[in-house]
Amino acid sequence: MSDLRALTPARVALGRAGASLPTQALLAFTLDHARARDAVHAAFDPAHLVPGLGALGLSALTVQSRAASRQDYLRRPDLGRRLDAASEQALTEAAGQGGRLVIVIGDGLSPKAIHAHALALLGHLTAQLAAAQIDIGPVVVASGARVALGDEIGAILAAPMVVVLIGERPGLSAPDSLGAYLTFAPRLGRTDADRNCVSNIHRAGLTCEEAAFKIAWLVREGLARKVTGVALKDESGEGTQMALPGGPG
Image 1 (cartoon, rainbow, N blue to C red):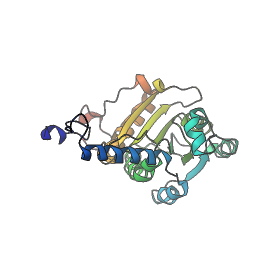
Image 2: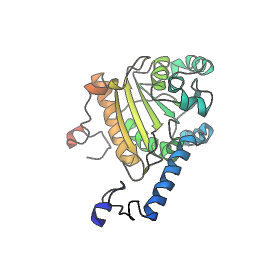
Image 3: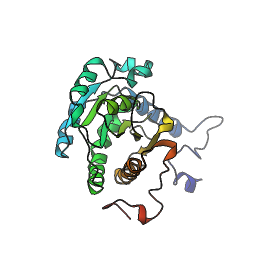
Image 4: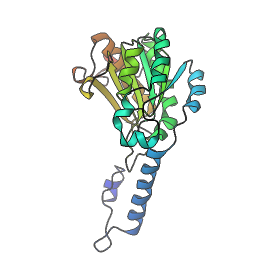
């Protein structure tokens, strides 16, 4: 049983004390559950990201969804899928700045994941995109964001593709997991079938370097084939002939 537990952070082979869990296992579960709840309710600080984006040579725009508070965001998922009026106007005025790709950083269900991993991931990703000669527009930092908010942002900025980096729903073993969602020809009404997802980006999961390679491959192939979602299979690991220039072979 100890060999099995060494292979996974999942709750297996915990033992028992009578009809219950051992005290240590119960306390560990309670702690992880508290960490997951804290991650959902953590404050998001867009201003913290802007200097780091500048250090990567990226300009930033900050926007807000129609979810005016964290409580609204959690109770009304629909509000997190649309921009508020002021943000819509600000993006409309910046519509000429977009490149072939717009990157959105959204707090999602774990702002902690964004603060922990977004800049590190972007450091690797921008290098991969530069090697593939894919230009990106300003990074849009979005508060109260759901994945679909990227559809409206990408449409306003007239971007051929949008990548949304967002905090994923915290799990009991990973309260700071980051996800990346890619959509070609973003517009209102897109569904999850139109997207590709690279998920479980965190210290005990997919590393930022590994995730950046997968995302960059999907961006390159999505732009070339003009599709994402169910029409684009992730074949980034199926041979060196598909590797991006400068990426791992």
